[in-house]
Length: 172
Image (cartoon, rainbow, N blue to C red; front, side):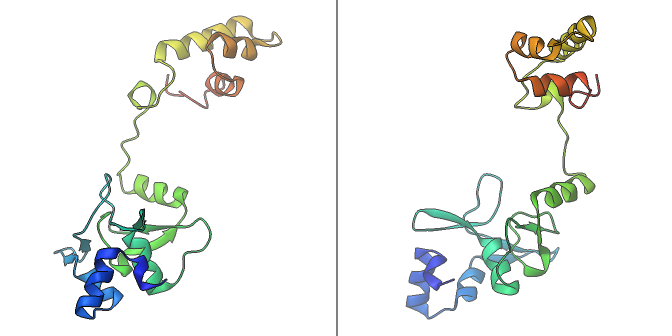
């Protein structure tokens, strides 16, 4: 990665002060008591360290990881062992899939696990789910029961099938 990819401001600082890439990064880094190297520059709405270059926002953690360990392969993401989104310390970063990252969050108790109507993007209410199951029981064995319920509830048959089989909304 070329130096200008960091950002215009850091590039100007390098030209003015003769700094290396990492020195420029560390100008905006504070070390806290837990050993994290916290980025004090721009962070996104979720608190992740970001820098901007040519209108594109990039991950500082990704950049630091690649500087320390080499390019991330495929669809792997840079994850934090310290659970601090502002941390850019290479020893606190690891590669993982989205699934790995979510399992790590779950194992550390960071996922609240909103279910059903408490989930922001829910489509059905608990009463509708009970209605779907009751409707299916009344039509059990009849051809097209799931397709009929899908049309009735304005969704696809796969969603209805998962509700009926208790693969979705399985706690009610």
